Image (tube, rainbow, N blue to C red; front, side, top):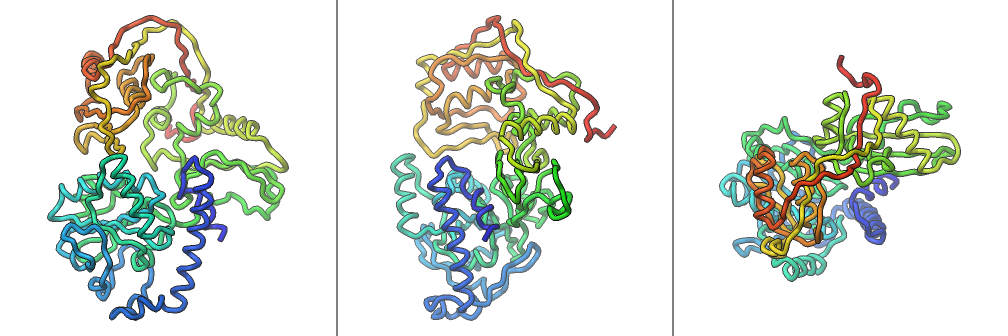
Length: 469
């Protein structure tokens, strides 16, 4: 039960505490309910089905296993099918090179905002890819809640789902158990369970590799409880320790958290980028300074990348600090700062000096890119085509430009409005003059000034402990 609560935290990376508690309850209740149902070989409604015995005997699959033959022809109640069907079977997708099951819930915003991306891939690879959305029973959703969700998205964004989905599923949630959403299951046309991933693994390159059964470059998702492995067991008399590890699959994603356990104060950050961890430890220094005003003096290139352009799982870390008695958050983050300086050999300080800056002035012409109100989308991977922002705050778009410009920028005017912007896929390779032309076409005037500007200076203290020298 303790495991479910910890993973329940990741279900809702949400500002709404009420929703967080609700989802914890739902996930716990659903797991307990599922255990009871399978203990009595499914509910009576399923027993009446021809394949009831097979359904009752479903066992979870491991990556590399094959979907049992009997399940290919199991009737599945489907909603929103393009051909108007009420019932389908997995066998309907057997002519595809790849089948993707996307597990989602009405309370998982990132799941829902990912539907247009899935629809685009389904259209792009119509002959080779089959996508089926799965709303599992363990989510606590029902048909009424789902219908209200899509009605709201229709009213707000004029969005209508273009993919079929299963509601209150128990078959696939048993075959592919999971507790963290988004969750995607990849199945080959011959029925091999290829992969379980987060949604960001779904790219054109990965899909095309999976068509031939190659998933070597795809990060595999695991839903273990996965708290950080301890250096020394707690019952061995450990008084104080701090621990820094690379990404731990299955541990979820937990931002700065301070708890008291067995007389010790424990501070944790789990599976966050080095940039986030430095921002946390040096918040008093880095707060309010954009990343294009970060200066690096003699810092290892690997550390610079982790701070400026972290590459997902490869640049994520876990940190745990354990001290006896009570500890304040400020004290914990002072100790975190000391550990970062010891391991990475980098300290941070502020520097104020006169500098050339670009002032980005929002003009009334910005109205021409005001959003049409469609579902929020961002596509920042040049390998997937043009860069675009749909129903995204102008301030976010301008900060993206600031990073590309590479010089201090000042934003002036109303930047909170939502906009739709499409940029060339090679925008990152454009020079300053070309970027300024794009900004002015959007309705943003650019002028050069000299101003007193604050910079964050990252200084090399010594060869870091991770250096390969």
